Length: 536
Ligand code: NOJ
Image (cartoon, rainbow, N blue to C red):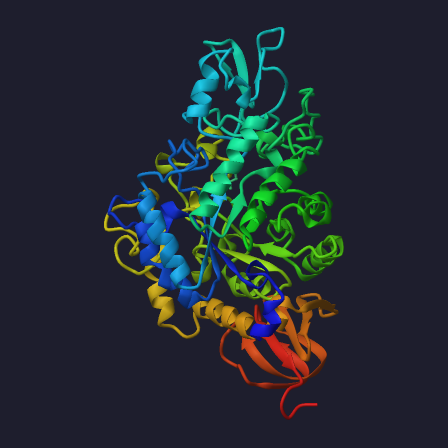
């Protein structure tokens, strides 16, 4: 097996696990997660069986957007620890055979970043053009109709210099001007700084927002906008997202990664499949993995998902490596989005599709979104645009390690409330239960490691009952069949070639021999090995 995988990069056959550092493990007793806490919990990731850890931002930040407002790209926020803690973390990660991926936030900085402080100080500041400044419209208002993702206009007036600056997100997150060569150089040096410290790759934040229309044309109105939708969607982001110049910038980032060899660049871009493909770059000179978020929004039913897989597979550029994401710190959790009955199906799907999967912390125990009372809301998006369900606090609550008062996350009351169900849904109790969701994730990840068909094999759809999604994964002689019952009643897959059950989502019938028909219980998924000893 080792040989089979040797032709592939670690980020192709590996599995990524996302840690949201504020909520993973508090190591110093202040109610907020940190690097020493992560070090303490690394063995959970080893037992789980993932290959790489991606950390959401850990850099110094006023935390207006919880770290996605970076005030210094080359240091660690004291809330999370120190550079020495970081070095300990990277050693501990590598010592366990894991890789470390950091978040890189190139689109904007904090308004407290020294670059912005200098930029706003005067119109004549040497760094004025490091950000996107413009004169007011003739009526004194913003230069155009561009809107902030987090509500309100995307322009804020700097009274002292009488110009507006652009921010795709909060006013506290001014956009960098990537058309300026000095910005580009400075930001590329940030990558080098961390690569030299041993980082194995980056997840690049909000890449589709990196560059805006130079002529500042108004965005057209969105005919599909309805009350209840995010106000930012009142206009189409025609001139503020996915501009052609972004690809040059991505290639420059990639060239830096290539200077160091064997590193991965992952891009965050919420785009339709055809436009997403351009993020692999011409001749694959862009991201290794432009995040594929399409499973998140596709209706949770077999025909729609089969069609998505086909469309994605067909659109991939030659040699482009696929990837799949089911959730992250910005999106509703699986148990809440799909219902608890489908959590195991989601796990089996994510970990058996062709391509690199990313697991968000807590999904491996089936955590749910936690309702946050208005007075405890932290997320600036929810504060700015309350009541529409846009807030992301519910998916960022502390990791549930055990059934104790604060779920083993912290000795004190944490920055966001712990889920009430933590007495039942937690790592310790699931580790002791051979049929838990955690046990299923572990079994799936073990299987991925030992069966190249699952990590690097081909994918072939199989026609099935309307409630069932079925496909084959093959590598050499290894022929696996995955069948997932999305329905709440029994389903049958007919004309199955004889095989042996490797894994059921219920973890109770491995080894069963299947001849001709595979009966799936409600919400059950199975992985079958076709053929094998004693079978035709
Ligand atoms: C995407 C990140 O995932 C999100 O959490 C953040 O608020 C925005 N980018 C802005 O950086």
